Length: 62
Picture 1: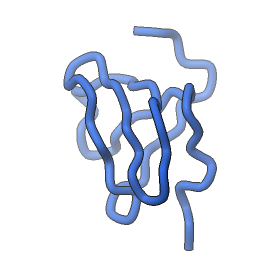
Picture 2: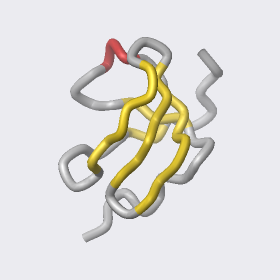
Picture 3: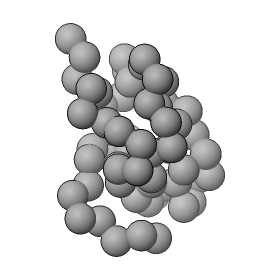
C-alpha cells in the first residue's frame, strides 16, 4: 500500500518521531524517497516505507 502517495513537493510536513525538527517543506517525492527540508534538521531523505509523514494543512513557513 502506498500511504505516501499524497505527499507532493511544496507541502508542509512533520516527522512523527522527530517533532523537534519542526515543520518541513517537501522538496521531492520519488518512489519511497521523500526529501524534506526541516528548519531544525536541514535536508533529510525519508524512506516512506518506514515513516509516515504528517501533512500539515495551512502551516506557516518557519
